[in-house]
Length: 217
Figure 1 (tube, helix red, strand yellow):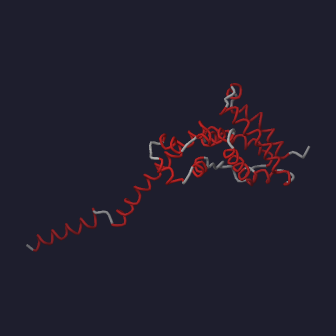
Figure 2 (tube, rainbow, N blue to C red):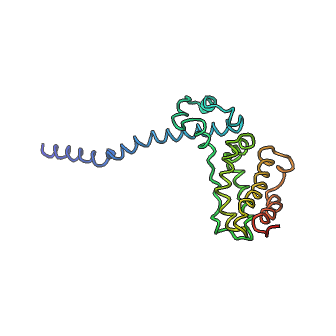
Figure 3 (cartoon, helix red, strand yellow):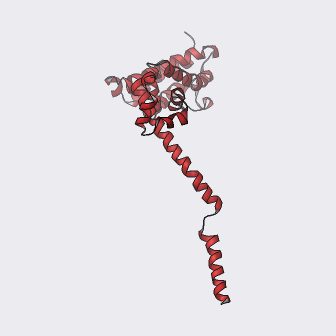
């Protein structure tokens, strides 16, 4: 009888310590599920917003249309992003992932930037969507200006011979990088689309190098 009770006690102890999840594990699981659902919802909203902003522009795109594309209620969009301006800011948030300015050899900065931006344009649909919006809408244009000002300017300051000329030199570099993106990925000019990556780098890298590092004309 005592052996039986001991066996039951042993079995009970094994069950509580070996097979049941700990209380903190159960709490983590419960807390994790809403977070994952929230992430999925946010991703769906942002994907729909980028496509809608790119197709319709900022002014014509509506919260209701974006919510419909994401298969959710419009109130959910407002819950996560507040209004269309907040949604736009989140949808077109872009990190260019530029190399640290100090890691770029001065005499190779033109080639490095052209190669890097080709990777970005081809891999990052957000950047292309922003370019489409920026071409026709002030909010999109200001967002693109801010991205280049905050992320390209440090590279320009690092390599240009006169820091006072950095804004102009960065702007000249942007004419090449954005012009390439506009004609190759948005307007899709056939001759530009047909250019191989190596050809683009060979043509544009010397121009960017001159804009960023050559003496002032």
